[in-house]
Amino acid sequence: MKSKGKILVTGGSGFIGSHTSVELIQQGYEVVIIDNLSNSEAFIIDRIEQITGIRPKFYQFDLLDLGRLDGFFLENNDIAGVIHFAAAKAVGESVQIPLHYYRNNLLTMVNLLEVMVKYKIVNFVFSSSCTVYGQPDELPVTENAKVKPAVSPYGYTKQVNENILKDLIRSGANIKGIALRYFNPIGAHHSGLIGELPRGVPSNLMPFITQTVYGIREQLKVFGADYNTLDGSCIRDYIHVVDLAKAHIVAIERLIHGKNLSGYEMFNIGTGSGFSVFEVIKSFEKSTGQKINYKVVARRGGDIEQIWADTSKANNVLGWKAEKNLDEMTLSAWQWEQKYRVK
Ligand code: UD1
Image (cartoon, rainbow, N blue to C red):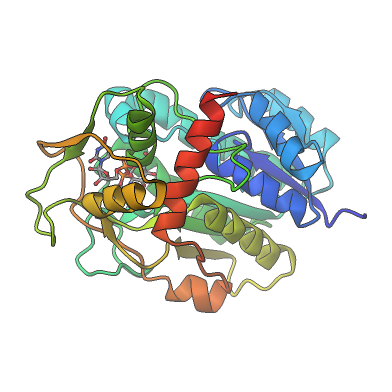
């Protein structure tokens, strides 16, 4: 079958990158991955091949290495589009080592855009986050909501990178960009072959739950039950990673086929529904039949109380809608954890 075009996926062995690579390949695209494996494993490339029957071309290097990056584009100047995931993403860690986050997340973005301009690669999808909104004044939050001062260096890098992309496009450079502002991606591919694979102690809720139930962590700590929400715990818009992956295909195709309404667009990518931490726990227990050992502890610094997406723009303009519900998300996360551990 003739390929629909070559797509560069940076961070393609990571959680969202690997699921997106699978969807791209299954839709008939040729996928090339650049990843420095700083927070992912090389065997994920094998797993992508196992699922799709096609092995994506894999380049292991750091996007900070401008020389390597230039050489890569020289070799691959027929790329139809770039989906940029590669970045550090731990909120707490970014407070501890801010310079690492600024160097790693900002300079790589600059390098990538610079070589894209040089080699006349036009279509760019950026992995942004709902973190750019902070605690919104109105819920559900729309793309028009004010971007609030970031509470962490991680969040700040997402805001700055959106601006870098916007400024470059405004300067008249031949680049078209879409920023996808993800809410909370969880779950795993139905094959159980790829999923979230945090190094060390997970800081995110879902992998902490699955590891606790598997017996790797002793107890889940629920960070605060005294918020001004229905049951006192924080509310987030959890989205299945495969739904999220599909949003990237729609976004890159929108650019490739010139359907974008302006040079720079951004979309909320969530389900449009908020769930509390206790509701996630209940869903997990119901969908898997497993009990979670948890206790309520003090609030975690930097957490916002509640956020969920207004997804009308993504639904109506982008033409994408999340399909999977919370029970499917929690069940698939558990299936992945089990299958990964018994390998
Ligand atoms: C945050 C960012 C998100 C970013 C992600 C990367 C916001 C709104 N979201 O997600 O953009 O991509 O970090 O890591 O800024 N929780 C517990 N116990 C735990 C872990 C989490 O109770 O052990 C609770 C948290 O308090 C929160 C919810 O679970 O209410 C989700 O937390 P987490 O998975 O860490 O994601 P966010 O902090 O929402």
